[in-house]
Image (tube, rainbow, N blue to C red; front, top):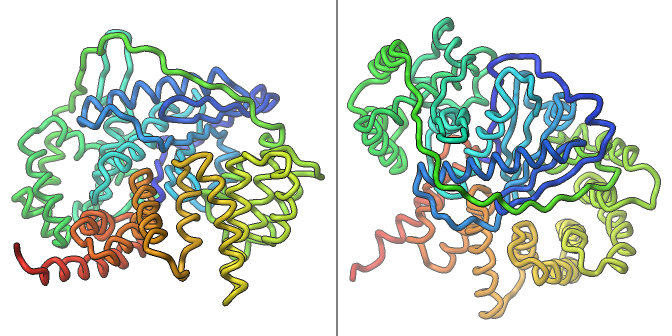
Length: 499
């Protein structure tokens, strides 16, 4: 699935954050483009926020992306190695960060320590590059390029007078010089999650080298664009590669080895004129976040198997402590009950809170979600009644924040299988398309939008959305669904009378 991108550390042994950090509360720092959460250090969160804003400006300068920011802000969580392990134990060892794009949350989680082998800033920049690519250039790219682009830009040095792009990461270069390269055929067709052990580190290293070569070789970059166009048209990856580059994978491997021997250079850019420091809104999170933040991340962005559901729910209840809960504990427990336990229990928890906090967007969302999930197990009039209740709460949340992606998606879901007037159906379509505009990187949202475009006989609008999924190496099962829908859309276009 496209929702997960991981970064493998070039060096093992990530240290934990200092004891001093755990003695303080979690804080959040919000800027125009990101919200950074850090354990016990406003300074750390503010520094990361400022660096990410500068990095965003650099990426816009490099790519020509529009200056206008998306309302969809990336959430960034700075974890110790222990906290990261608690949230994402399924990812295995030597993972330094992960980018997860789901309906409930679009976020980057990073092991953040100044003593890390790869560098905490590099990890943050790597994950942000994934977000930037999928937010502003949402299309199908090979996995090696997705990771290679992120690797190349992640080592950017934001100096006082100039910005340096493409610095070599010592660990990656060491792997390339001393290790056994994976075959080029494998690099071109695999994703990093399909590769184990040292070969995964080599995947990142070779991806970095290939992307760096494209950055500094204009003719090769033009060939890359031809390769991507062929891939997006449905050509098998290796055929598309040879069509675009005009060489075999083995020949390109030899070219890259020669490029490495030439000690690839970084690029220095002049720093733009002084830009105003971004506005930062700082908040201290409730005390329960100190206990619940990692397991909350697992609940929203991680993996919980059926066998683990009961134990995770019990652990969340234990960490939350006895009622009354603060806001963070309440929302975490309610979300856990909705996903792992009892929707009725979740509603019982949320009802008194919404009585005293009627304009809580997140409270309204969770109450609507509880009714919606309860409706999944109901039929007939009972189902319609539950969907109506869900719609009532989600509609109130939408009026408070019309760009809140989870609310938009779940509000539209309340109409699933229900009869709609023409006006209501038009509103339903517009909500799904707005959701996709706000969060194009979420597979569920893109498939929903493409489906509704096909149902309204707008196949030409659906085709680019479906192509981005159909030939995306990270899309998993969504790719198969997208390929089927793409064939339907293309058939409808072909059958339409020409003007």
